[in-house]
Length: 498
Image (cartoon, rainbow, N blue to C red):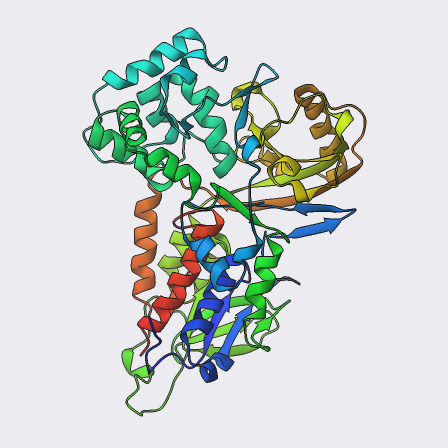
């Protein structure tokens, strides 16, 4: 799309994480060059990137949050290509492309063909030590169970127990999904997270039947290959290089770091009102006097006026920012709950680790009563992340299971994690390198009914011309989805200009 002639004169992007940067970059791509001088990106922190941060230290490359992104959604790859980063994309090491699941303090390989919630191959399920004979029998019965008739939402826990039984839920699905969403499975919405499995049930009557048909049609191998890329990729210089590339494309004076936005008000009318401003207050290209739609009030008391605003913060921050402009919108945004994690990265000499680390990492079921959600064999996934002969392991703790760990002091957390690694991986001695990143309240929780909540939020936003939302709270938590929401927000405010 191209920007309309009557594009907004001044546009504010609030939030300098990947969503906000993707929005600002898309505006630069679409607007005439002279119009980009009126683009302002506000970031309350001292750097751009939000949770995305790569640390280069002692010859290690340590990602402090996400360490790669999925390729089955195109938006991450597409952005990297437009930024000239295609040659920097690195695939996971082929021989390590499998995951382990913990049972009884032992790591067992996830059954081949098990795709997050359902098997495509029955023999690996039949021989896996992760499930008991009764658990395997109950899972096989899924083929014969009638499908649910209505389309109402339900929790991940209810759905998986209903289709595949308690043991498959506790031992396979719960740890795999928890590693992605850090959520309470009794509350996590199927329709908001993995709707294709409900669609499989509806269309084929059985998950097993649907997955077998997909496999016979070649869909499985296609989805795992990510076309010319592996299922997951990263950037050779770390994900911070994506942030740097985006920032370099923005106008020189567009970014304002260490600048906190306090609230957003309608410009030129009663800020206590709860709806959009009267239409005559904004010039629609007819030559009349120009009145900006929104007043962005900064924490130092200054106010700046903009024709359009993209709010690319977390939902909790967005709720506070937007309440003066729309009380109900602020209330709806405030109902999205958040959890957080801490990530403990440790490096060891190869001979300090008893496990062969012949995979990409492991997940830990809640029934194991471990403080760990998951672990990533970072230097096995991507060999450039550690010097030869060293092993870099990243461990995730916290989430809805143990929310207190997301804030635990690093000096308390490190020995707790090291003790678990000793039991699970046979680690001996102290790490030769270590760092801890805390990310409390950064993971939105897609509870049952989330899709209806997002629809209500969008309806309120659509009633406010020139306003758009972006971020991980609405339609996906991964990097590609965050990029997509930012780019959609940019296109929306330009399409609805005037």
